[in-house]
Image (cartoon, rainbow, N blue to C red; front, side, top):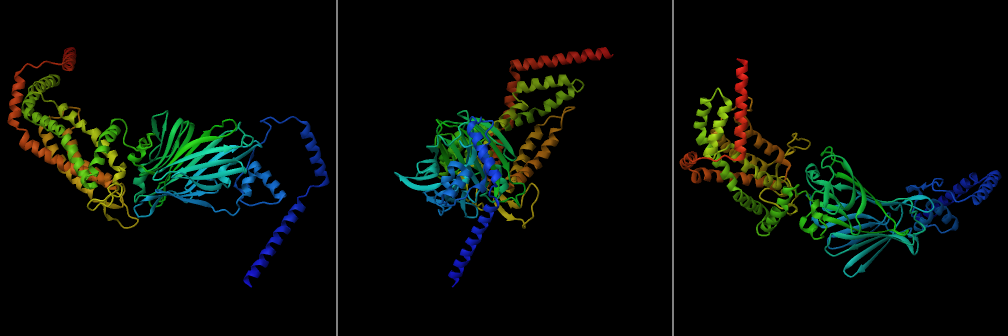
Length: 638
């Protein structure tokens, strides 16, 4: 009975719709005068020459002009062609086809949208997020891919609005997904995806067949690619720092858009575009000619991490393409996978340069030393132990720097009584005091700079490791002691929901606390040594002793606050590094450097004639000239 009622209701509905259509057609039928005017206009148009491009009106359609509806009668075909021209054929096919086609590989679960022909969903099988949920790079319409082009009947169309006809086949071990936007059974625009086993790179090609007379080659054809980065980490703010649009151009030059703000750029001869989402990347690669021009934008979507929890950044790229003989063809690659330098290197396209290893020498240190060293150590030891072993090796390698610093401080401490005596002797002649001070330090082989320069050598290593740990994919979700993820912070206490301390966060991490304590004691020891050798503050110069006292407390506080939201592997490194530095300092002070022997060497050095180098001679001459000028000024005043 219910089925019969349903049928009757359907019939009534169709009758009503048909009646409304008839009424609309009746109301809109032309009058005899309009018919006569239309005939006269058509006759005049036949007699005229073909209109120029300036006179031709381009018809721009929108999504409301499209519908995947199967039209069978000739009147409907004509009406549909009036709307979208030659591509009306695509709208008459497969009215009941599914919204997407699903394909599985060893590493992917993919869904291809039949509307627009692009990837609707990309799921990585081998990875999960911090909540053990699957990692999706494309999901819930966060990705848009479109080709905008003109047609010979003066229309502007978008592939995203049309249904594509899917087919899945095999080519050896590879799976081929073909998505075709058809003009006729043998004329179409095709997206071809070739999926290889255990491979994150998809061979992606776009080509047209038989569309020479359909495209308007005088109008530009443009490829648009947009994506919102899906958050996968427990701290979206921290994740957002390493989420960035990177691109390579002019064969080997790499550039980036802004890290924590909105930005845009235009580049030429682009080899690839990387939409990086910290530990995962979506990369578009050109496999034939570089993109002649790319317009890129990056919008930061994280204003409040309590509210903005889904997306990090919105990336867009607009890429003009070129016709060839009235047709179109472009070979590309689509990489969806981990931001892992080992994997990215295998494609031999310098995709690993999209990882922020650091610029200049800092990046070189990471790529040449720390990445291969850590890969080797992590193959032998658990990841936390590998960090500790690498820290020990680095500190041993740099121990000579610490030795040079401590030796310089010891020399300055020994010379301090003599230097104080010189300053007292020439207290009324500061230039002379400086000359005698420099002469004594030069003879003794002691200089304040000799302690500073070795310290500067540690800066490249410090910064390189600062960039290495937050981007090391191998540390992702690797646990050590209480830290469940060495690539993220090691929270031991979470504040109540909604409560957060500015600049500190909503939790307490333990490794930064331990690192801050170690830094405090190390600076207490080194600052005490430096202050023992510190010379009196000269007039007009800042009081270095006060500054050092402030640094004893400021540096640990900075570590405590700034690193509370950073990778726990980095905090672990600094904690172990400062513990080892304290140990090395105690060994150097108590067992290696003997102040009596250092004093004896200084006396021997002072007794020998010291040959001045060019810099020392120049400084001496400048100081003598300054002294002469001062004396001349004093005589004129008297």
